[in-house]
Length: 389
Image (cartoon, one colour):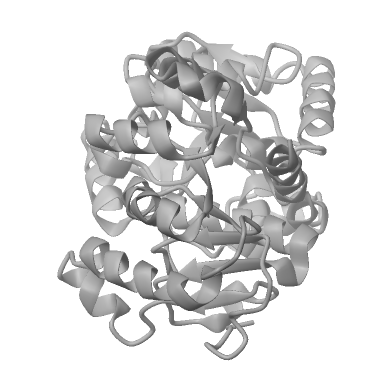
């Protein structure tokens, strides 16, 4: 429910202050939306999600939200003026909201710019600030955030260790909580590949390796190129389906497939609504995430939402053997390739996956068992418990 200025003054426990706009095809706003839904389930009216602007209110159904710039948000984003605009907006937002109160409200942030702005205002309004870190950030942001925020959530152990070593004061005030999944969205989809492929117009007779997500966000190769190249070592019945690429990414990777004469064996699907993600995942025979481990972001800092979605899909998973995937999976529930896998290695593991049904069933069962408790609601509960500690 969109809140007006008349009812925004209700007592809150957690305010998730963001500059996200909806709808969005990017991972960070999607993560924010899942987080907000989790908080809403456990806190109800005591939670509010502050966003930039919303074009489709249905996206935030069931969440108390407030638009900071409902009319100017798109223009501010286009002109790259969100940060200075939020400094003034946050100041005026806080004056009636927290004036004269003791610390009863926690501000939850995962944007280093907004966090820095809010920290500047922290002492004036006696705020409690919890920052969720998704990266290492530059020196200025690290200094301000990790010296002056009150509590910290890290999405990986590697990231927490790096920050704890640099800012020893964060050690007793931090917790590691990986990303999560909405398990019900997957349980509510029929577990029948034939039915799902008819629905999606995918070939029923092929063995389909699936990849879901952006192909090259921020210019970082996430393994899709290797998955395409691996097809040359596989029989014709094996194909690849990549779901979620942007227009430019699809053009780039279509050229790669064509250059290798594999264009007939690669299907590119642009961004789809989140409700279709479980449908696509369950329609595949194998789900793949094989980023190179020579990138610090993949090796230490990211907790891929797609891995939890893969686990919830009850399909075999092939992953790169890097620290961030090891925090989520092991040999009991996934098939690993090396940290910088070759195309032939990927192909060999795909053949192994599709050839041993007994081992396959055991890994799928263990994978689903693990992810069943790792929901966005449980994650929000853990953050709430952490705030009380």
